[in-house]
Image (cartoon, rainbow, N blue to C red; front, side, top):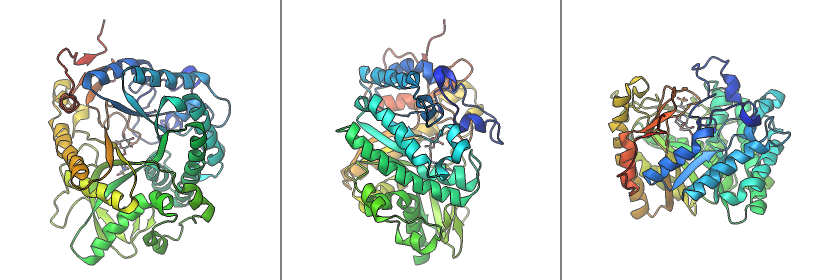
Length: 448
Ligand code: GBH
């Protein structure tokens, strides 16, 4: 995956849209080296063992497997992921593999506009089949997409992330092509990976009505329906939420055939959850994905923030929202199983701190200490079928929107030497994982 691997042109890998976005107005960092996970994966897996980590989520770079997205297969690319999966298994770490975490092969963007074009669907199906044939027996858990609302509406719609395209029509085409591609890929998955489980990984920020007014309460519900329902409703219910159909004129049409193909295509529900937002009814207001009749803010009427600040401007600590968000998903979709595929925190200012200060990441520990019990309560008290939770992230890594400035790792990465050092939060998690860190080396790989 683009955020950790590096070696973007090694062993036949083709360029992705983020390699080329380096020349666009962004943060100026490139993913060319990142965490050099391409070479260091084995020591990182050893570190997982030390921490007591039993599950690891990663994504495959499409352009490593098919360099131009739609042509010849690059065996060396597949071999890397085979080595990675075999090493995880040997270490007793179970993988969860994502096919697409935003790093589109550049050729597909250049040739036909990427996800905005329906030509993307057969290309993605071809890529997925190659992966399932080569690696399908090496993982039980899979996801097709990570956060499609993010890559469709921020990369193509809002123009704020690379690709920096600002065209809502392209974003809607993207979202529709994602649904079609997901349905088609799951069909192949059933044939090629018997016994495997697959879903789409979705994200939401919990919606809090700004006031007790019925209008704001309704608006908060609409916000959840729009953010999760844009994909989960067609999959679980066969159509978009009524609240979206009433308001968003550019909404694509879910045909009976597509609804049929999507039905049953989520074996579990993967949710990325980080934070929350206030929602106020606002007739005629537009949200990222069109006319939604509400406005969002992380500040209440008195001017107070919804929670403590992280480094990322969008991230505030709202542990109390985790349990209601999980319940919202459970009550609306009744998934057989839910996996929280990301929770995580970047410490304010960590990117410019001296190492010793960065290692003492008490606000990240607070984040986990506050969030994790909410998930436990959702399981024990509310009977939410939550079976797993992934921390984002093991390592500091390359952020598509922010480069190397924002650090989400529980291990610090010195990007100059590639040395990793466990932060205090890694020790905290090791305690939860029942690891015995007695002989742990806190910095790795060791320098000669
Ligand atoms: C995750 O998304 C990503 O899956 C992961 O790749 C990333 O490393 C991690 O966040 C940390 O950033 O720019 O103000 O429009 C988390 C959910 C949804 C959060 C989109 C940022 C954009 C806010 N993301 N959101 S803004």
